[in-house]
Image (cartoon, rainbow, N blue to C red; front, side):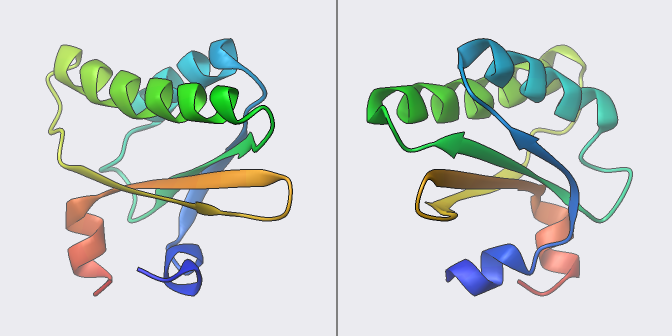
Length: 105
């Protein structure tokens, strides 16, 4: 999927994360808001430098969302794309696979 396609996905909330604690909090908030109530996804922005932090933040977000959905007994069919958002940040867009199908992405 191209960056333009990813950015065309409707976003419910954007999280600008700086560290691992922010990542845990954002993932929990995404699950509380819900992936299935609206036909929208979530965007996570994280700094590119240091690169190790970006990898760690991305891993924490994706795994925490999945495990939290399981704990809440919610459907875990979430799709996500990682991309270069701008010069200083990576982005991840997380969205329900049903929403992806309904919006013909």
